[in-house]
Image (cartoon, rainbow, N blue to C red; front, side, top):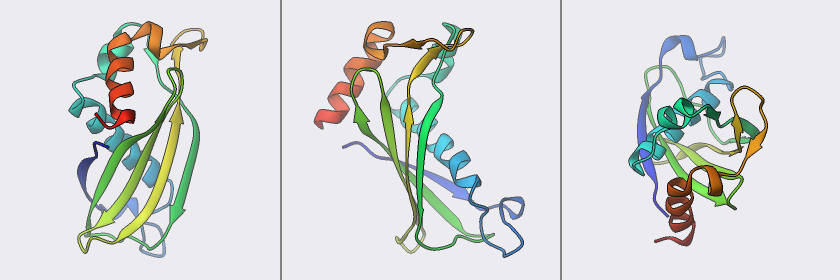
Length: 140
């Protein structure tokens, strides 16, 4: 399994009144990690969108283990957790500088026509993505 690590410096505006990262920001960080992961595979969301296709989140799971705070540097480890030719799921861990996991998560996605939101098959519409994702899932 190929994991991509993306550093995040926690900014003050990402924290809440308790001084910890507001839970909604983790989904933003997951998106940053996912984009870097896809780029590391040699693929591009930008190119997908130029063809009138977007990839919305259809489900998200987050488990909070320990807080992260302003001034810390954390790392988003991202990998392809599931793929069946239509749906893709990405796994995430937010890891502190001490190596401890602060948050675990998963987002599930499909691709759709940008104008109609009609679902599309990644396997058919983007065979290069399908080939790369299939190899990732097999650990090749």
